[in-house]
Length: 338
Image (cartoon, rainbow, N blue to C red; front, top):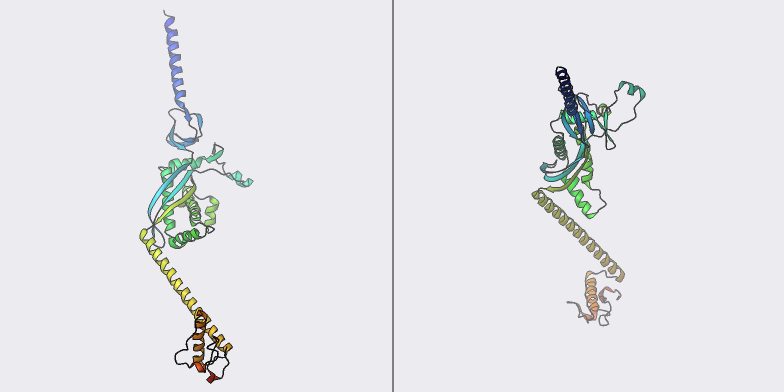
């Protein structure tokens, strides 16, 4: 009995140690699901980023503070009462897709590589994601998804405050309806907005900061590791009163143009008639206005196929060729009949 107790206590001790070790190791093993990364803190401070897969954390020292999704997100937002530069209120919809910024390695010089620390990246789904982008998205902002959507909306509002909607969009769409070859204005604006939003979400590189003269400590273009992959504007709805005003103005301009064309046409017709009149008078030798009017009268009756009565105040005996239906002029002017 005396020999059994020490052995029993030893076995219990080994089992206790084994249980403790098993508990520590089992709790230290963490699995990060595919499509996500984990932020690890050690003693309350950032330590590293875990890629998808199985990892071991030191219990009581390490903990996963946040999970960050790597997939691309898509949102459709309705924005109302956007004021443009020409004081037009419009409503519109935007569709945005965004994700954690993809890391695009570039070739650098050897001396530059020696002084620059290699950038730690995560390989997921054949793409590279920088650890510092993950850290900024998880730590520097409260909710990077909501922050990206908010930055897209505010950037769009600021951009539309500077453009003339009627000239740059409304009239371009009207011309495009008549001629499909006219470039659509909204894709161009969407592309410009995508670049502007990325300056806020992803930030500017060191080279871009130097080119634009921005100080490194300027927080406006520091970004938080999120990339806007696309922004599409659709369903633009101007204020109804503005549409009615523009339609009335367009109709007034069209009516004014029609009046100008009609006036020019009438003037041209009168000019042609005057030229024809001078040509006829010169050809027939009708130098007297009354003789010309008499010829016009007889010619009109002749073309109608009827026998022309003499014009008022004209003696038939003074007219040559009247009864035969030919041209007749006054004998008193000694001009030949036509």
